[in-house]
Image (cartoon, rainbow, N blue to C red):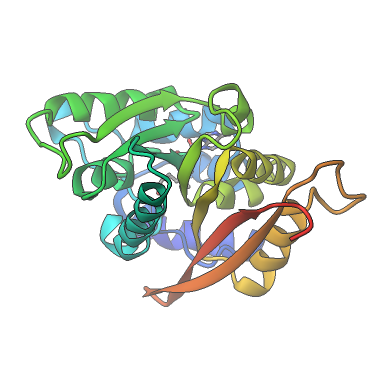
Amino acid sequence: MALFSNRLTCCLHSRRLWKAVTVAACVRHHSSLIAELIENMDKKATWDRFYTENASATPAAFKNFEWFFGFDSVRSFILPALQSLQSQSTGTGTTSLLRVLDLGCGTSAVGPSIYRHSPVPVHVTCADISPVAVALMQQQQHAQQALEPQNPRSRLDFLELDCTELHGRFGPRSLDLIVDKGTVDSLLRSREGSGKAGHVLGQCLRALRSSGSLLQFSDEDPDARLPWLETEARGGQGEEEEGGLAATVTVHDVGELRGVCYYCYQVVPRPRGV
Ligand SMILES: C[S@@+](CC[C@H](N)C(=O)[O-])C[C@H]1O[C@@H](n2cnc3c(N)ncnc32)[C@H](O)[C@@H]1O
């Protein structure tokens, strides 16, 4: 396991300066899969293979796989954000569930943990391009049905979805919170994925309500990620798109793990001209 970890970290270092990916800590893989991950993390086939090879032989032995870190490292960003969103919606007299999307959920426990621990009522959708990951999550949820959410109104579902097609599933201003742990990172770091990453960001901004936020958890330094987010939120490098979106972007430290600094980028859609 350690061998895999060192090799993958090394390769990612040299190719794209992805300083360390915790992927290897609990996975045994062939070098061909390592090579596929380095180049093709924007491809469904890569992730189907990853989750298939990482799956336990028996459903009872299922273990969530966490990119970077798990829910405990992000809960202090997510739960207060939900509380604050709820107080804003209470102010407007709205009592519906807050809509939360875990973008590229993989088999992470983040989405199910939001559902389970949020004191405010939420409808969490965990979406991923890989049907293998989605099926594993559904099986796991089925096995844990007895675990009640903190708020009895909360809901949880799983969805196979290519997030470059977010608009086909989530209408404009329909989501309150989007959580992205490592998904846009993996698009940005793929040979053919950077265009998709910008596209996904634009779609997230369109799908968020004006009070909503996208929280991106990443190891990319702010001097690289902040200008990327600000440029892409305006519609890309070239001429600004007609009606292109702008956003306010802030960065918070998540902390250091195994010598790598992690950040939470909060992206809030901003009406044009503000
Ligand atoms: C680095 S993993 C992160 C998984 C999970 N968020 C976590 O924290 O463990 C990236 C995930 O993004 C998913 N993914 C890649 N491209 C996608 C796309 N276009 N739409 C939806 N999910 C995608 C992959 O299947 C994979 O599960």
